[in-house]
Amino acid sequence: MSNSKNSDKIILEAKNLEAWFGDFQAVKGINVQYTERTITAIIGPSGCGKSTYLRCLNRIHEEIEGTRVSGEVLLEGKNIYDKKIDVVDVRKRIGMVFQKPNPFPSLSILDNVVIGLRLQGITKRSTLMEVAESCLKKAALWDEVKDKLNSLGTSLSGGQQQRLCIARALAINPPVLLMDEPTSALDPIATAKIEELMDEIKRDYTVIIVTHNMQQAARISDYTSFFVYGKMIEHGLSSDIFTNPREKQTEDYISGRFG
Amino acid sequence: MNFNYRLYRAIKNRLFTILIVLSAVVVLGPLFMVIKYVFVQGASSLNLSFFTELPKPVGEIGGGMKHAILGTIYIVLLGALIAVPIGVTCGVYLNEFRKSKLSKTLRLTVDLMSGIPSIVIGIFAYLMVVVPLKSFSALAGGVALSIIMLPIIVKTSEEILKLVPDHIREAGLALGLPRWKVILFIILKGSVSNLLTGIILAISRAAGETAPLLFTAFGNMYLSFNMREPMATLPVQIYTYAISPFKDWQRQAWAGAFVLMVLILTLNLFARFVLTKIKDKKGY
Image (tube, each protein chain N blue to C red):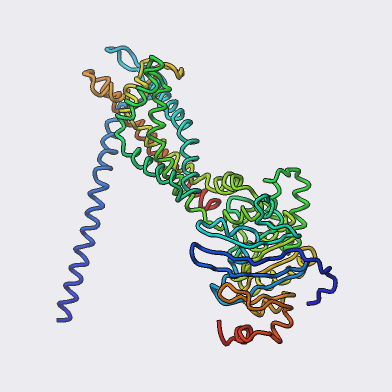
């Protein structure tokens, strides 16, 4: 994976980020920078806080009662945890795809993609159609659904539903896209489709993806972070991490000796 | 030894099966007897003029309960108009702020409310609406029925909204939508058929109430659609006719009971079967 065509602009940065569930600290002192238009994979054993960390990046972690976050997350230099910043604006600029495909049950395929825009007040049909088509194409779903845009989103297969959710997240055009194990509920063929489309998405978006699958991380990512017990043990170019890790713990994990 | 043990098991098994079937029969038996009795008595007293005519003076044969049938529909809808917005909103509040202090108080209040005897609710509506307006009125009846419906609607709304998985809510929030839009356009919209089921069950419960209407809507012998005036309803009309000494009125009371029962059963069955089918296709 070369990132020669990318600028080296830092789009997102975590500074001493920590997160709690009640008294339990799930994320400990994370410092990291993300370059624009790259894919970063976060790997680590179950329960190591990688999902929680990801959910801090778009402030969705705080939706769970009894949780707390400290530290800073800078989106283009501005701290999203600043009191003056509206959380709604943060989430418009940092999209998310969840582990379980979760299209909105009562909505058609088309409505699922454009609901974000429509509820923001954009109702012009031609605009919405244009966005829907381009996002469904980016999510590699257009050819499969173009003749049934009015069917329910939930009528699609699991893999298609997840691509629909990716299209839905892309529709509001966030510069950063977070993906929380997007393929863990999918079969290998559906997984391959999503990995393929991520290469496309990278041209326009910065992607941070949590995955359990190390081969997946090695295949698709430019950078990889390795998490254990809420700490980031190592972060660097994926090619280095998977061939020549600096830390013993990382080496043990990727070679299957632990985790 | 082994054979004896198996025989013992078989007998015990059979015994419990019989007990379970028996208890089902005990529950279902009275229900079917009521339905059958009202059907036999009511259907034989029923004719077209029952639906199309107003009551005749005592002594004259014929007449119907058109005014009471329409009055029941009017007052029940009026009650629903008051109770549904408040009830669903409370349900949303309880579900969104599950652990807040106000939620706990509200939940307890709602539980207590569903235990209040309906006659007490009638007295309350009498004091709050009839006394200040100085007249029995359909409005007072509607208020009384809305208080009957309210706890049912709040409870079912809360339970229904609880069914919406958290990740659906998060998906909405992650799109940069304000919380109220997520609740209104994603969570409530996806629960419409479920909510309707709850509302219809509340309506069918309220439609059969007599006590709260006795001294609120009161009843009359004419067709009225004036909210400020007394209005006839099926339950009150049935009550008045059933305790009268006239054979003809008693027959009409049976017919009224039959119509009311069919109305409520139909609503219930509609909610249970038709709406559930829609839900399976579209809802949570």
